[in-house]
Image 1 (tube, helix red, strand yellow):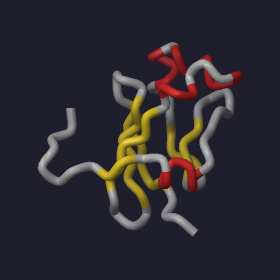
Image 2 (image 1 turned 180 degrees about the vertical axis):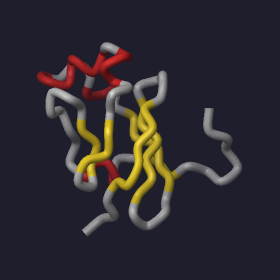
Image 3 (image 1 turned 60 degrees about the vertical axis):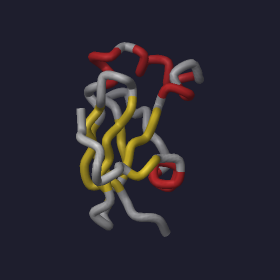
Image 4 (image 1 turned 90 degrees about the horizontal axis):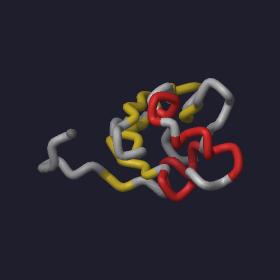
Length: 85
């Protein structure tokens, strides 16, 4: 089982800065999902920024969410040399 999300910071570029239970920080890009079904509501940046950590994953008020394994496996590790915008 992959680590679970313990915190999320939604960014202006529709990415999520995630911290996982193993202390790893990773970036998940939601852009490829924004034209798919119920994820299209996330195009509204003010709604997108309502993302919250819930039970090891990320969820929005109208219950859009991602599988926690997908969040880990499809995200990219944050480089230690990179600053967070």
